Image 1 (cartoon, helix red, strand yellow):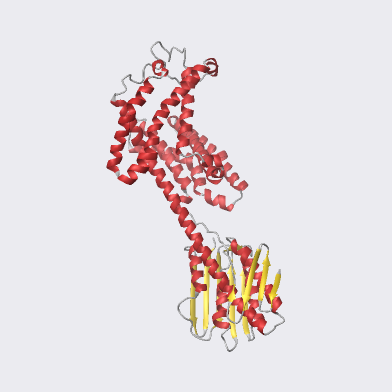
Image 2 (tube, one colour; image 1 turned 180 degrees about the vertical axis):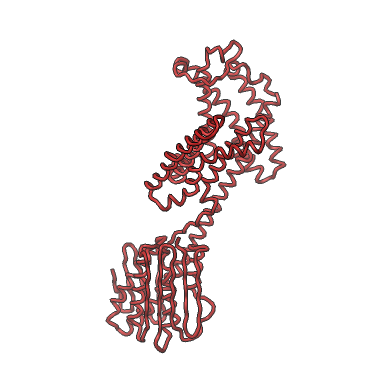
Length: 532
């Protein structure tokens, strides 16, 4: 909605929830505008695109290593023979893993699942059966294990992909950090060991007068019948593991984060020794006093001061050190990346805020000149300006727009300029667009046309030229703007081209080419974008 507030060329343009006030007089023009853009992610590297392939290669190599170790005299020849035996089995999985990313991009979810089923539902079982029929009997078990491991690895990769895509959005999953994961693992291990211990009761193989050995036994009937014993043993195992978790917690939360980071390695080692000396006799005494210690045949010595208890505490702290450091490094790296992304986002926002008022300032000058001449086209021009502003406000906030919308924006702008232009203009706009739904970043092409009018057409005394050439397909965009100029253009870029170059660097890193030339009163700008 347009509202003229007074006779002094003051206009209010209402577009949705936005209210934009335009004030002009003989000397100034004011416009307030804010917009945002998103950051286009960079294309992953070679290893990232074929990561699953290398994981299946690693699986193949480990299978060869483990089978070679079973021989008393392990030789390189045995290792390569095993790899040659297993390679035909893994051909379907390796081919699928190599092309996995490309298949997911070129096909829908149903099409991708079709290729997945062909690989793991048809080709892998077929290659397994064929290799069993062809290879000697001694390799049959290995071939079957190889196929089962491939299914297991694919399941893990699919579960990880699901977590990366959707699982992180769940609040309860995001709350599971290393500490919570350890506590959950400790609880599961305690319950499992308690169930196996109760299932081994009264079994002469595991249970004697002297001790109870934990066998690989699971008996629901015994667990229910001795539920009190099961619960007691589970709680005692939980307490025992929590004592070990205490050393990990102190190491990760205090010794590494405070002492090692602030005071160095020497004080960290001394602090570890002091912590172990303070806690290990107390913890050892508590664990030795547990009833299950007697049930299992005094697996913990009655003397709490034995150095083997101290070595166990030291082992927990030293083994956890690289894990804690790696997690802290990953956390810091994520924070740095978030800050860099925020910085880039802010820089893009500022560039857009500089670009859009620059364009509207020029348009306001045009409207001001028309209002002084009391042109009947003033109201129509303001309506056209409102359409342009609506595009900038709404479409300019999106990460990408269709090439169709961007071309319409150019046409509207040029039409608005030609209304007030009182000189002959040789205007041509050639368009070769195979798919007008192809998307690009918004407000890129307008900079060239705006500069053409500002630096060439408006200041010309004779007939002027504006030739535009736009070619766009699914892989590449080419835009050429050629306009006449009266004098040599300064080599230093104005704010429009400077901001455009910075935006291209941020939005299309390594995927754009911008060339400008000035010769024989003609300025030419060429932009090429890689859209693949």
